[in-house]
Amino acid sequence: MTTSKRTKMLVMIVFIVMGAVTMSVSPQASAQQQQSSFGGVVEEPFAVVLKRDKEAKARVMAEHQRLLDARYDLSRRVDPNVKMTRGKPIPVGPTARLKGVTWEQLGKMSPDQIKEKGVFPYLPLPHIAHPVGGMVFPQAEVKALARLERFDMDFDLPEHFLPEFPPAMFLITRPDLGDVSKGQTVTIDNFYELFNGILNPKQLDGLRLLLTQFPQQQFNATADRKTEKPDGMRGVTCFDCHVNGHTSGATHLAGDVRPQEFRRRIETPSLRGVNIQRLFGSQRALKSVEDFTEFEQRAAYFDGDPVLASKKGLSILERGSQVHNMAEFQELLDFPPAPKLNILGRLDRTKATESEIRGEDLFFGKAQCAVCHTAPYYTDNLMHDLKVERFFKPRMEGGMMITAQGPIKNFPLRGIKESPPYLHDGRLLTLEDTVEFFNLILQLDLAAQEKKDLVAFLRVL
Ligand code: HEC
Ligand code: HEC
Image (cartoon, rainbow, N blue to C red; front, side, top):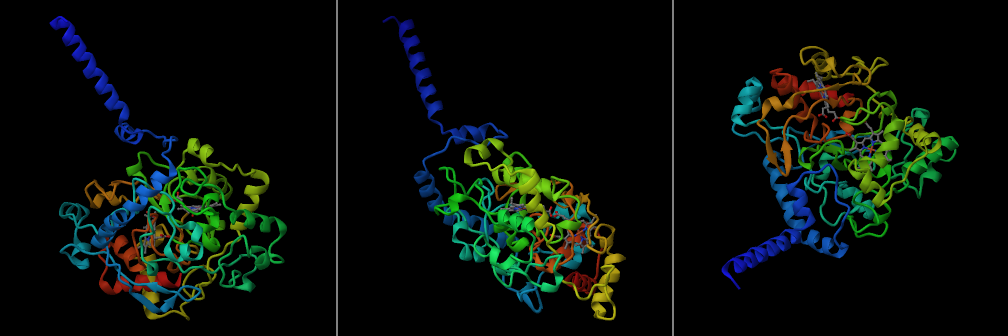
């Protein structure tokens, strides 16, 4: 062989080896290099994923716990005298940990000063394992419905910061009945017994569908799933998250955003009072409960990815009958009674404490809450951009890009004490935290007593 031939051979061998190395890089690794709007449809064997995820679970949970512990004091502090409808005491805060400043000092600082010092206590909250995401159900719920357990992660926030489980259920058509769930978790097994004779046949059928499992990204029959349970492979029901038409506090990532690290963690909103609302979804702004019902299961269940949906089991609901019946039932769900509010949704001052009265005056006056949260339901049915990014520098934390999030739906405040944690992502664990948050967002510089009074008012809504 001549030298030049040998060189050619060598060059060829190098190319072949390089080619082999490139091809052996896993599809996941190359997907990470090049961002795509689509998820992968090629899956690894289930047993491989199961083993790897189970081995990694303790580390995944510990890492997220460190983030939570750095941000919050998660110990149990509740008000034994203020309870949700079925008797769970409400959590008391503020829970956010301050870094070398007091609440009072923070209240006097400008957004720029807070940003410069890096002391904003209410950053966007990442998912438990943000790069993976997906539906995760609280412990009390998994205890009751074992099919909702995931093998790769558990829910993160302690029980005392969540709505009661199961919550009460009120119907606008039958307020005389009080809690129609009778203290039970309404499921496909007991709904007929509980509701036959109370609902009309159309509404009964709608409720049945809301309690029927449909395949979903993590709960489905393919190898790309996060459940080991055969009944978990049948999917989830609408009321797995919206338990009894309210919320269990279950979380996932909104399907609306790409890439993954920009997606928002979203806490399940209550369906109580959807009848008086006009926009649905924190950012999607769908215009009817029918639209949301039709698309929640088609799109949000699969991260907004129709390719994966058709792989894992898309169930197209028929608009004129199924979707309509499901929506009709949801429109019956009422807020819990608020005995201290009059028919205008304002405080009945003959029944109110001094602190609640001062709180209402602040809410409609100095604190400006009522500019957006208007009576009687305490929503203006719009979206608002609170520009929270004024208070922090963008950065990656917990696998999430902490940055500007844009306008978000203004959720109603009626019955608010029954649905902690607060904000679309649940980053505010208590009502005290919501008041501290808005004190900064609106630069109100409220005194300690004024904050207490505002909380007292929020508790009666
Ligand atoms: C992971 C648990 C989960 C399941 C299961 C689920 N939802 Fe939701 N639901 C949510 C979350 C989270 C949102 C907020 C979405 C957003 O902010 O974009 C939501 C929003 C909604 C809304 C709009 C509420 C509002 O205040 O804007 C409706 C209506 C709704 N869901 C109905 C349904 C129906 C019908 C089903 C079954 C087909 C269903 N949901 C299944 C978690 C769930
Ligand atoms: C500029 C409009 C605006 C003003 C003023 C305002 N809010 Fe809000 N409020 C919102 C929006 C928008 C959200 C939802 C934000 C999110 O989820 O990220 C919200 C959410 C909340 C929540 C949580 C709701 C839930 O279901 O999680 C509470 C509690 C609340 N506001 C209380 C107050 C109080 C108290 C004040 C006055 C100190 C106030 N708000 C002033 C727009 C406003």
